[in-house]
Figure 1 (cartoon, rainbow, N blue to C red):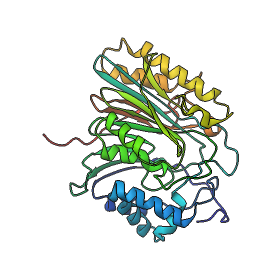
Figure 2 (tube, rainbow, N blue to C red):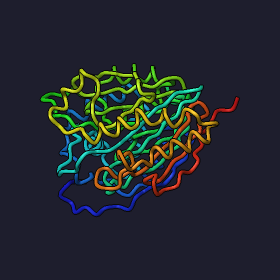
Figure 3 (tube, rainbow, N blue to C red):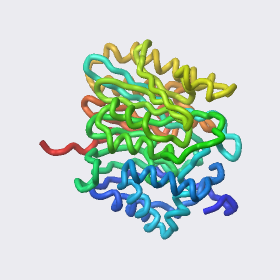
Figure 4 (cartoon, rainbow, N blue to C red):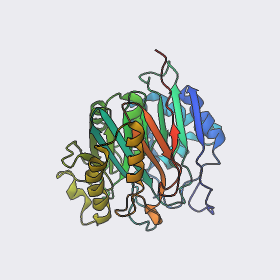
Length: 356
């Protein structure tokens, strides 16, 4: 579990897990199913154990079942939970070696009573963990009644994107900034979307949550429901929300757009991220406006996410699209591509619905 151990890339893991039960049962299932956990070689060094323990206390106060799930995962892997959490509680998301710009892209479009999401998750192909998880939490889970469907990355318990039975969608997008001199204990990035999906029913509720919690890292989070959408731009130093979509769609990529947040990026080059954001803010409205039904809306969203001009769909380095979603939130209709959408077919996904 250290960087000194020789690291062999794993094959891409696109498995689908479906569980109705407790968070601890989900953690045990994933812990038994995953290969032995190892820190990825590009992850930055871990934070002090005293600091990561304080972060665990923050998460436990917000949503205790998540830490129950984490401990069950550690037990299933026969790992010390404290040491595992220290490695997964990532503060500095900068890589130990140069990766290039990250490329995640999401748009949200609302029109004619419909709400369409397009989402590509981009990163280096050596990130093996690309699992989809459909989870129906036990009714005994405090404060959590939302069935969810989403995708995880390398750290246990996380969600990089997904939606819940209330029609709330969330996605994350890393933003590179200078690491602040001081960071207070907070929520690791991979759990922020998970908290929103399980604790919130609307985009406004999720904005309220994400602007109140302490963040460890700099990211954009797109939050959308059948009625409206927002982007929360988060950093350990401050957090802002924006919801204007003057060109017809709200887009999130890998740079801050709020005037209060832009100075945190320093002189970093954001040209690629800005190009994708401009494309996704303008094109969906032009192409989706005249769609006749949900199937056509999703077909058009697939075409948008397969774009190679901006490029929204990447095929190299840290701009490699590892998976893609298109969702119509009013009907909870979703399609998922286990790879880059210009070459990978989308498959219909279903989210469990409670019986009337």
